[in-house]
Length: 166
Image (cartoon, rainbow, N blue to C red; front, side, top):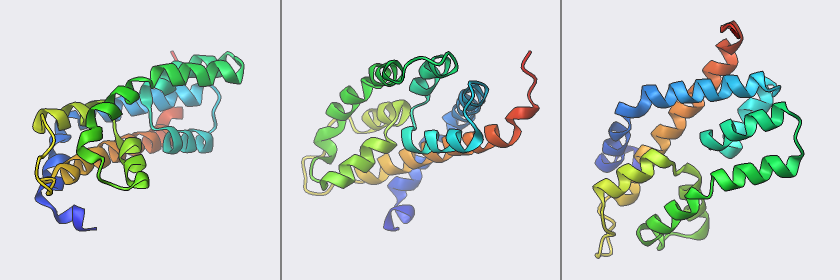
């Protein structure tokens, strides 16, 4: 809970404000597509909670709708998400001192925009024992990003049926 009061956490959250409307729109469109592909609202909610990867979700949506084999769907999502291996390798020096499950959490919340904005603010890892707010800033961005996405999921589930298909 100490992160929520950290000025770097707040700055990280503010850094995501300029992207929030676009990201929410992306979430709504992606999740209406998932609902249209045949997932029910509960499946759509849990899919987003567990996967949290909009590009992969859009890539597999036509495969789910087309009743493709599960291996094809998984492989497609895997290939689309390979960029996160590069993201993880790039930010590993910043967060390598944290325990394994902490790094797993950082990886889960990582995304395209938080990754890019983080490296823009911190072009190289801190050389001192203190992280100079790197983790707080990253979490401020990543949690804001995640919350905006999940809000879009809920809006799509609640109001997506009111949008005409034509």
